[in-house]
Length: 313
Ligand SMILES: Nc1nc2c([nH]c(=O)n2[C@@H]2O[C@H](COP(=O)(O)OP(=O)(O)OP(=O)(O)O)[C@@H](O)[C@H]2O)c(=O)[nH]1
Ligand SMILES: [Mg+2]
Image (cartoon, rainbow, N blue to C red; front, side, top):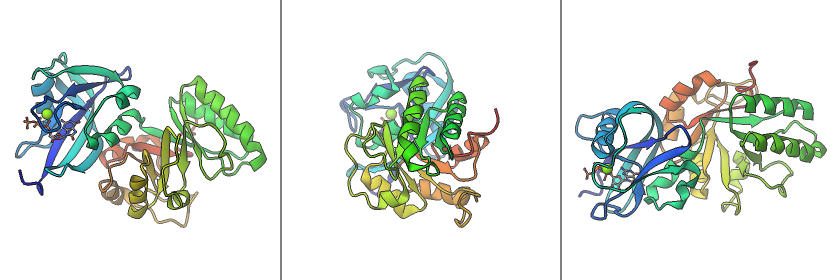
């Protein structure tokens, strides 16, 4: 096989809406045999990705895909072949999943996917499968405002937050963090702490690096379950990828009042940048919940925002 030709592969992350994902075992005689995978296969000539996905999932597990949305694209060079994994989340299907090629098949809780051995290219796919579509950045000028914002975010069903609160007085930070962590625990939400805040000793679900912190970071900090970073251009995206960051936000997609000096990327540029890294990327800057479809079609994991999730409910 010509190693220079990139194989375009349609891959399905099928979930049962209760937090479980369908995985199958690659037969021993195949490329990467003996490893677990998400069902899918190579595009045939003239096929679109949704067409290939539908055909492959019919052939391999006997289901008829009714609705799917783009999740992430991953490029990987295995040495003997290069692949472009075009991964879609399957939101609805007909039929009963049946391993049609004699392969082992399992429903696995999304948080336990890390316990299975997947091909090297699959790490970003697993992250993308575990991450939600919204990432809320928590701000507030005083504790009451921070907590009110936090409640509003959680009550809307958002389960991934960043404790950023740069406008709060430094001495109030530990108390604000404790209160926010209590709320997040009640709602089983994941809370990352912005690493610029003087809270280095805090116990956190993860850390979020500002673009400056990202530049100054030479190795992934140990012990962080989730590590995220803020990016504005390709160099920063590449740095995040190299550092082993789990996901990033890329901004500003639209012009914002909070960062008036920064030129907006627009969706075309956002998409073109996102396409060049194997990372889940949240779109940030001047966006609202209703932009999710556009974001998803532009290669995003979803939408991040400060005020996006604070609209009156
Ligand atoms: N389906 C699938 N393929 C993956 C994943 N991860 C990964 O690296 N690949 C690679 O993508 C390539 C194509 O996938 P495939 O072998 O399923 O293709 P296919 O169903 O058309 O198989 P066939 O050649 O037997 O007809 C393989 O080199 C495979 O190793 C994954 O999670 N799912
Ligand atoms: Mg296959």
